Length: 106
Image (cartoon, rainbow, N blue to C red):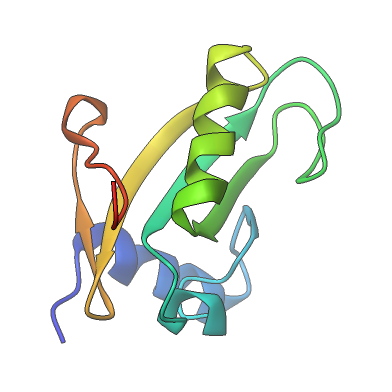
């Protein structure tokens, strides 16, 4: 299994108990679910959201619909996307915002 630098750092932080990222752990069960297509790290802006408080750095593994909802939250300036990765056969394929692919079936 290939791992990115981001993923190795996240695993090291989690093992050391110093992980500042709220939400899903980098190796959580949601990552390996058959309908999970996207991993998103984001910062909460402005006011409290279901995922945390303003300024919190969060990570979620998402289905296509969940990802579309997060894109809408970014358009509404409720969050700011920091890292995006496509989940491909249990691996994370990181990419810049401009290259974020559509989810399966689109």
